[in-house]
Length: 241
Image (tube, rainbow, N blue to C red; front, side, top):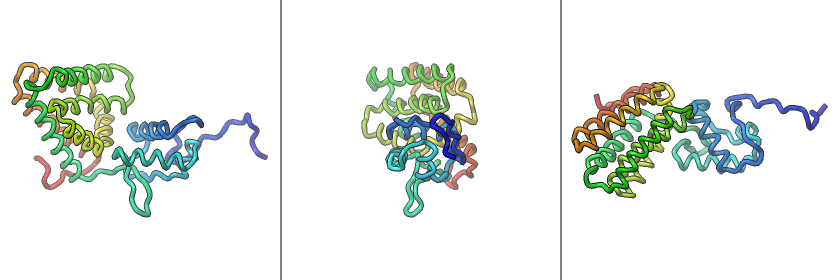
């Protein structure tokens, strides 16, 4: 006998059972719900993102899922392989090391330009730190904490006042964003991270730019090590000691 219109719909089962969405949702809302699941750790790296399973779990058409997956692929959160479909991005040690090295070059270059940067660029760093501190002292979701954390590092690159370098930094961050999110979930030390970034800003404000640059390099090196540990990856042969 078919269930009546008032009968509750049983929750979907399987790896996407925690996903939920209103039937009126758009592609953007589907993508946002998928991001939430990825950043909250409900869907692990390498997990296949099957259109049919996702459509059934979220109650939307497969074409909507297909478009949303395209958004995640463009953001670097998922990858599309020929004849294999879409899956959550999985990192390897070489990629982690290379991205962290490139980020260090860009961010340290920005820190060294603190004195010559515009007041607007410097205020972006200050504002990003305030936003991160506010998120850390609230009940912000893991995705929100990670976004606030990354905004500070983006602001460091912004001190170069080069749109091309900032765009490159965004692309690099997209590659390791899920790894960074997992580090933040595991460490659960947002308040310590705020203090660490505040110390960096204090060095910049005092004009101790080389000290700030050195401290930032160490911060990013530690971030690389933490990410490799969180992802259970061995360091790449060329990685820093």
